Amino acid sequence: MTKHNAENERIKRKYLTFLKQAKGQNEATIDSVAKALSRFESYNKYKNFKAFHYQQAIGFKEHLAKHKNQKTGKPLSLSTMNSTARHLTAFIEWLSQQVGYKSRISFSDAQYFNLSEKDTRTAKATRKKPVATIEQINHVLSVMPNTTAIEKRDRALIAFTLLTGARDSAIASMKVKHVDISAGLVHQDAREVETKYSKTFTTYFFPVDDSVYRTATEWVEYLKNELLFGNDEPLFPKTKTGVGANHNFEALGLSKEHWSSAAAIREIFKRAFALAELPYFNPHSFRNTLAVLGEQLCQTPEQFKAWSQNLGHEGVLTTLYSYGEVQDNRQAELFKAFKKPHMALATGSNADEIAQAVIKAMANQKPVA
Image 1 (cartoon, rainbow, N blue to C red):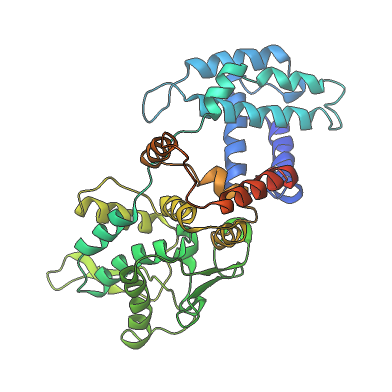
Image 2 (spheres, rainbow, N blue to C red):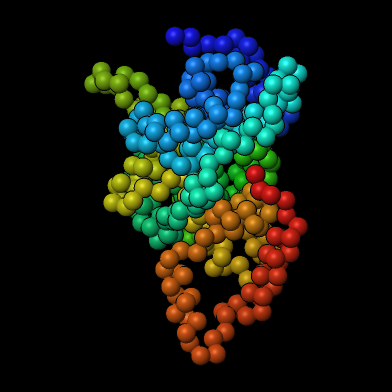
């Protein structure tokens, strides 16, 4: 059976280039689009896109609903189906404007990929994210070994993630020079650090426990003074491996190379939480922990704006929508307090100020990507 259509490949390549160069889409998004196009082509037996008909979109949706994930054997999630449908809708809309296609494909035909309103709402429904408490993270740090260089690195890695809220990909690419202990900050320079959307910004250490601060900063001093790392060497170096004294392949200490990805960081987190006999919280979830802390500590719109900027967000709504969910136990506490007569909010007029600031931001803010 044919598994290739040369003309389709050319127009797909043109579209993916358009997404990257004109729309500025990142590689992960482009890979997702390419996968959606491949799924549709496979279902459609690699027919030329010029022969697209809206009935093909309807049939493809029915196919997706019956399709099973190759790894789990379970039906595709509505979230996967919805993202696939969105990518194909955008592609057909673009295709309908291209020379050689616009006389054959109607712009409105793309809409037949859309899921039902009910399924779309279900696919987009947000689920409560488990958030590690400061106490849980402190417990993890307290039980982690701290003797060898590798153990010190692993422990400092978790402390540094909480102290800065930096993303794991950024941490994997940071150098010693990006941390200024005396000023209490990390300079996330997009020319060298893998930041989201290649954005450069400064992160000041969050006001977490002193023990967390000491664990992270002592690691930087250890790197400089004991291991003699220079400014341009990795802040969290990868493990050096080789043949040990027992002629087995094993960890031999730390190299002076960066991790190639954040996968090793996530593995360190998994082992640490397992050792502490706690559920696994990935590195990114620490940003939720810090957002919850910010809701508790910030008393004015200006303070919350600064807190949001420290997470690398341009607008406070990103922090509120993506990270600022009120946890169940806190929600229960607030509603118990509502029952008390003449209840006054703990923050007084500051709560009104923050509410007004959020309303103003909602009116002015552009949609968040």
